[in-house]
Amino acid sequence: MWKLVVAGVTAVSVTAFTPAQAQTPSANAREPISAADWGMLTNARVNLVKAALQLTPDQQKYWPAVEDAIRARAEHRAARYAARATRIGELRDSGPVQALRNRDPIAFLNRRADALAQRSADLRKLADAWRPLYQTLQPEQKRRMAFLTLVVLRRLGNAMEERASQSEEESED
Image: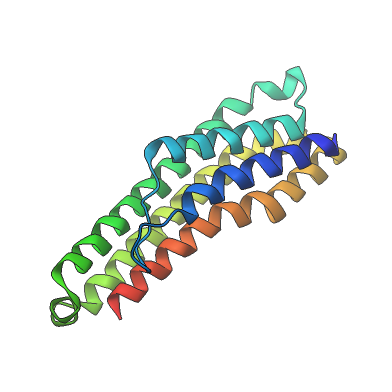
């Protein structure tokens, strides 16, 4: 079982970090992550979780809601990332002097608040979707889920979000 989890973690790591680390020739510019890459990452996450839990037939009926919540969260994350990439591209195109002149800290705070509100709503939907399934999990399944949630999926998911946030904050400064 743990070999499956390790193989899945390796697959997700390769999927998650390869497109995220691709760079264009300029020192700070990064190649945006494509919709196909986001889709591959989401599919890998979904498959990893499902394989690690080894759901029973009775538990399978709760899985579609969980998968839908995972996919919705991933779509919103991809949309936030794309919006940031567009904003950063616009700032770079305008040049550093013009970008400094057009800085709007209130707009920045509003964008961050909107992003955090969306993340909050997505996490709430995910928790609500997991609740009925989690109540049916056996102790070993709960341990595997805790491992995946706290160690693997959280780090992979937040790595891209943090990278994008840092890029936007650097552009705003």
